[in-house]
Structures are given as structure tokens and as C-alpha cells.
Image 1 (cartoon, each protein chain N blue to C red):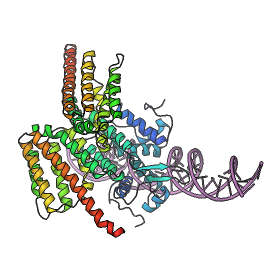
Image 2: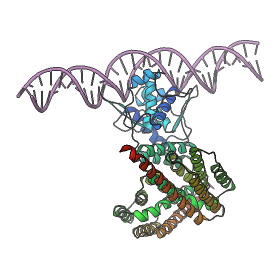
Image 3: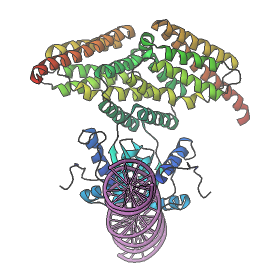
Image 4: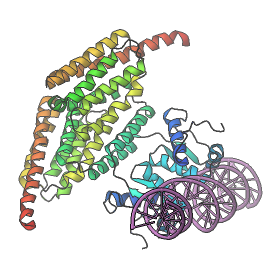
Length: 250
Length: 250
DNA sequence: AGGGTTTTATATGTCTTACAATTAAATGTT
DNA sequence: AACATTTAATTGTAAGACATATAAAACCCT
């Protein structure tokens, strides 16, 4: 064997090669920041052409498993997957999953609030002034009169993001980022009346106050109220749209 | 403009092209199962060569955004991202994240059990005979005397997976799959004594019974006990390893 | 001798052209 | 009409060349 990367026996070459390299990375045979052989060397050792190697490397680059650098000391390096990159991937995947699979609003919403509830006890216990300040700032932003529906939703996401990050557990934050952010496109479809905004802001304030007081139970209650109110809101809007559209189709 | 895909102004060509196509998919300008232009047509319309287009397509293929088919009616098609594929990506990403970032066991464990706790109320409410049977079966498997540590961990994952799926919320299942499965390599590092296994199995049985009785509170209590017991177990093992290794280094 | 500049070597990024493999539809044959 | 054959379209792979970026080595000027 001219190369040290065990390969599958069938399938497309570039796919087999990328899988072989990925396995090597996951298994730790290629360490973080280690430089891979040059494309030409890889091509020679795998017995394929450079374009094929390049396609394989692009697959890995798409998953942030390697980074490439041009120039004299350049090449492909095993990438340390950062939490930021992982967030990004999670959010794209979650967003696509929701937009492509006709997940109904209620299911997504239920999942989102269930997950957020998971971090409430930790957030209530460990909340820092930093995260509390962010939550208060977003609440203030939400009460601006000129704010668009989109801006309101963005602020809503930021608020909940601060709530989640308040747990000070990066793994938890990473897992929840996708769930919360992927919901935004769905949330953006809701038109918020002045009254519903007031209600939501009040619940946000309840949550912030409870977290500040280390009162996990009160925070969970407020969050549950918010969850069911959001779902009701979406159902109302859907029902109203239906009755408004029904006469037109007749 | 010779192509309908807005592109960034700087950066590598293949990256800009893949980003343009990805945006088109996410924005819904390219619909599910729609066929993209052939590589040659894409190359012409973007004003680049085929290999460059191919690298861009490989990036998208790596994220399961497109699938390619050879032959006369072949081409690249927009892929409906299935929950299964999304699971897979989430698990790989989470596993890499944990293995590459020296996340300590306690943080990961805390996140895992916090997330699982999120689905307990739903699972307790909606639990089906199917999932209950799986949980019981895994409990039985865990009590087999000849079972390896690895097998025990695998069964543990399967048990918790059934617990999560019992909530009958695919979005929730998807989000939690990564958290639970990515923990397995870390869990595999623990050596389970006969006594710790007995304790864990008993707690699993408590959870199953509580879920069966629609008793969310009891299930949460058992899960919390399991969480702290697991963390203690890992700490014990780490402490024991340290004291055993300390004399050697002196 | 030292610091700034130029050269050079090496690597990835891209283009061009060509051929192989695969697949479905069109075509021909029995 | 059913089956085998050809054909056309498309992706997969190959080989070689040039463009570009980058760091290190060589060089030159002070």
C-alpha cells in the first residue's frame, strides 16, 4: 500500500478518499493542525489525479474538517472544529431541515421551548450580570414602537440566546443554538400585534426577573406560558388567514 | 448577468459559487428535487471551468444539499434533507467537537442530562408501548453478565434514545440525537464495575416505570440521580487513575 | 553588519482538453 | 410487439499547463 489511509472498496473515488481521510481524522491518526501531504503527493499515493483529490478535500473543507492555505508553506491542515463553526453548521442544517420537511409550527415550537426549559435550572443558578444585561437590553429593544416584525423576532432570538448562554455550558449552548435560531424563519411569518408584543415582553421580563432571583421554578412557569401563548398566536393567525382566503377561492 | 444566482464579490471561485447555490436552495429559488443545470451549463453561465463547478458541487454534496446522478437524465438535484441525514451530520459534528476541544466529561454530561430532561414531560405524556418495550429490552440487555463495557454503553445510548423518541417530536429527537450519541466515546472510557452497573440499571428501571405511569416528576428525579451518579463515577475513576499514576512519575 | 528588497521555490487555485463510465431514450431487429 | 442495439447526454476521472499567493532564501544597498 502506498498510502496509510484504509479505503472503502467501492463507490466514487473522491468519495472514498474523503471518507478515508475523514476516518483518519476522527480516529486521531491525523492530529489537529497537522499538515496533510500536498495534493500532488496525495494524488500519487492514492493513484488518482489532482482534481479528484481536490474534490475529496473540498468535501472535508465543507465540513470544516480541514482548512487550506496557499503559498510556500501552505497545504491542507486538520482543523480544530471550533464551537463557532459547529454553531454555524448546526444552524444551517436545522434551518434546512425545518424548511424542507414541512415541520408544522407547533412541533418546532414545542421542541424549542422544551429544549430551552432544559437550561433554566443551570441559568438560574449561574446567571452572570453580563447575560442578565443582554436579556434586559433585548427586552428594551423589543418595546421600541417602530420595530419591524423581523426586528422583533431577531431580538426574541437574541433574548433566548442570552438565556441559554447563561447556563455557562458551551456544549449546551451549541446544541440549543440550532434549535432556537432555526426557528426564526418560521417565527418571522407571524405578524405581531401591539397587544401580543406587550404580552410577550411581559413574559420575557418575568423570565429575566426569575433568573435574576435564582428562581428556576418561576422561570420555567413563565417560559411554559410563553410557549403556549406563542403556539396559540400562530394558530390564531393561521385560522384568520384561512377564513380570509376561503371566500376568494369560492 | 448570465446566471440567476447572486454571488459574493471576493474569495475563491468555487467557494463563492457553492455559497450562491446554497443561498438559492435555502431561499427556495431552487426547489426540492429540482434539477440544476448541467455542469457544463453552470460552468458557462458562471464563466468558470468545469472542475471549479465540480468543486463547488462537492461542497454542497458534503452537506447533503444536493445529490448527483450519472447518465443521460442525470445531473445534480436539490436534495430533501431527511431527518436521518441530519441526525448523521449532527452526530459527526458533535463527536468531533467533543473530541477536539477537550470538553471535560462533567460539562458534556451535564449538557446531555439537561437536554434529556427536556423531553421527559412529553415522553411521560405520550409514551407508546413500542418505546417502552425498547427501554425494557435495553434494560434487560444491560443486565447480561458477559456484556462488555462498550456493549453496556451502546445499550445505554439505545435506552436513552428510546426515552427521547418517546416524546414523538421529530425535531426534538433530531436535536437530542447528537447530544446523546456524541457522548458515547467519552462514556466508553469509563470502566463499569458490577456494582455501578446494578445501580445504573435500577435507575433506568425507575425511569421506565415512571414513564409508563405517566409520572414526569418521578422520571425527572430518577434522571437527575442518574446524572449525578454518572458524574461521580467518572470523577472517582479519574481520581483513582491519578493516584495510580502519580507514583510512577515520581 | 544589518535591514529592507527582490528573487525563488512551493503550494494551492483555476483552466483546458480529453476520455471513461453510466444511464435512459431512441432506434433497429426479429 | 418485444427485445436487443445504438446513441446521446451527463457525470466521473485524467493529465498538463498556467495563475496566484506566500514564506523563505538570496541579494543589494546603506
